[in-house]
Amino acid sequence: MKIQAKHIIVHGRVQGVGFRYFVCDAAARLGLGGDVRNRPDSTVEIVVEGPSEPVGEFVREVGRGPALARVERLDVDDIPAGGNYRSFTIEGR
Image (tube, rainbow, N blue to C red; front, side, top):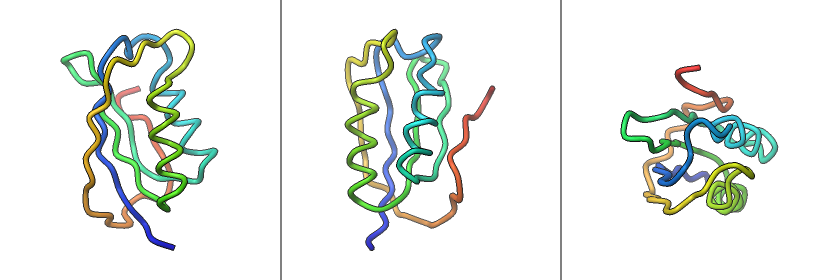
């Protein structure tokens, strides 16, 4: 099973709407590792790592976001998969 990793920046109304918790729940359900954090520029930054198919589903779910969010754009970049994540965490709670 090929492991991949992605670095994602989410633009839109994504802070103060439960977005990080939505992301964490999606990652846990899909068995992915990584972390999510709010950035000072009102975007959300995500690093996710896992098998290709669940990572693709995760990116699609992040693009939809929770009900109160409005995702305007995703910047998604492939990064080297290091196998460093055993779970998914929310930074800066």
